[in-house]
Image 1 (cartoon, rainbow, N blue to C red):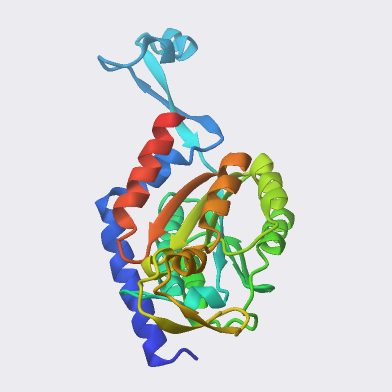
Image 2 (cartoon, rainbow, N blue to C red):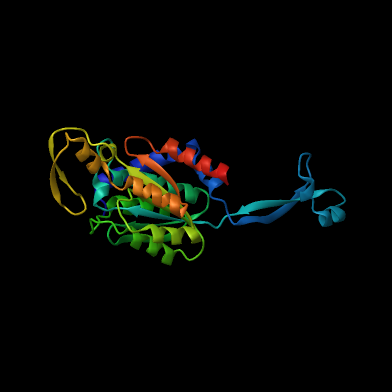
Length: 288
């Protein structure tokens, strides 16, 4: 039984994602993630402006008037969301925690998929697999993914990104789309990411919070690692200390994306994901 606060958050995400989809994200998703090809649907009478090469000459000869073949996109696509729910996702210095930001982002992608008649599934991971929703179709199925993201309390605090990528490789047997939503505060995942990229269409949605990227000079400050619980007191007034504290593997992640040829989008919790996500889709479509 979901508590009232979780139900309220689910309803808020439903309303927000509906507005975002109506603004064009759903169409951008459709354009950038293409189906397997085109399949024949029917024939219809020729109208001025139709491609000559689509004329069905056999039907035209029988009917005594030109008819053209009509094709529709054969999608049959599966989107698998890999969503990081580790301890570092519970951090947020502005409007949303990274975990809530990730949930909204996953919801937009899930509802975009079902609106385009694709199947969608989700893997929630920390230092273990926290939950798995097998790919399915329909609005209610997407809503179940959103509910699990908001309601499930992870047992682990660390991040095993390699394990999550390998799990995705096992459960997604046919070629599909894998969207990894994480802050990528992990190491040693390059080989698993590259292997997944060779078999599937992989995109990385790299979450950041402004306070992780830039530590303000405030003298002696006590820091707690959200994944290990380790406490550290550091002098944030020293530039070299601020640089060290700001290194959360962001540059390492960028290098991994470049080496494995994974398309990546960096998103800040201080800004809306709507504009950057739409721009990412459009840029990806142009490259293809």
